[in-house]
Length: 300
Image (cartoon, rainbow, N blue to C red; front, side):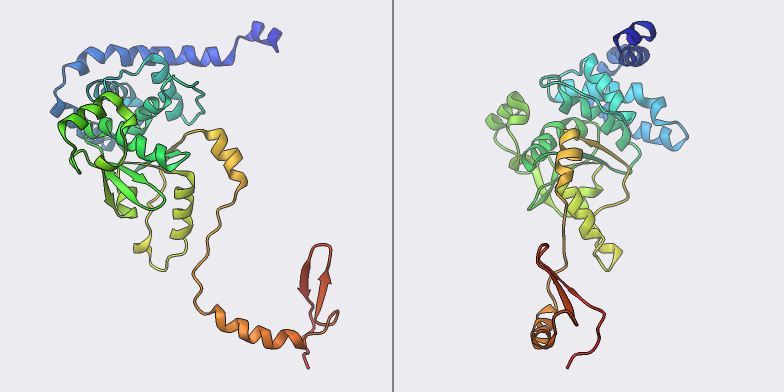
């Protein structure tokens, strides 16, 4: 393979070289976006939505959107997307897997394609591995989306939330602590409880794979479409994709309807079973520890 690489070149390097002009274009917009007021940032979001409705594609507006997210991150978190994070964002937008080592800022990188795809107004999901991270990232990255005029939802096992910086607004001392510690000052003060449906109607929704999966199963059990929580699927980013799609996929998600009338059947079965005859009415597989009914219909 090393010989082939020398002859034809490394495929990853070729791909990254193709992305470099796009990264340069995004960097070239940084000075312009720095001059935008806070109000202008939100107005740009509305403008970009109109351009998409007018026929432009997500790829057409990608440089501007990425530059806007970078500026919002600088103002709210004091963090600036580096080129490696910009590249990671492009890769995720294109539906590919981006491998980023610890410390390269994948949480921040994900805000770029999430904001871009949320401009379609169809909702975006960020699938993470546990409730803590879902809450942390909603509060942490929610500051960026809020500055750009988008709503953010969060799904936890017991409750769902919307990011609201005015909800239970803490004292200035604690607010300063949140600004200094970023994602490590987390959940309750800035997450307003809401219905499951409201969380899914947010522009961006953070949650675990289990919560998204079980909500899907529950929606398929409702008798009225108005009771469904989820809407049509549009775009999702999966954190720790190898763990969720390989390791976690080994554990099936199982859900069942509540017991309504089954108890009376137990009494009926208890009367019938003693009258069944082995080999004629049922067969026993002792190795598999399974009982199978035969085709016989006669019971004395």
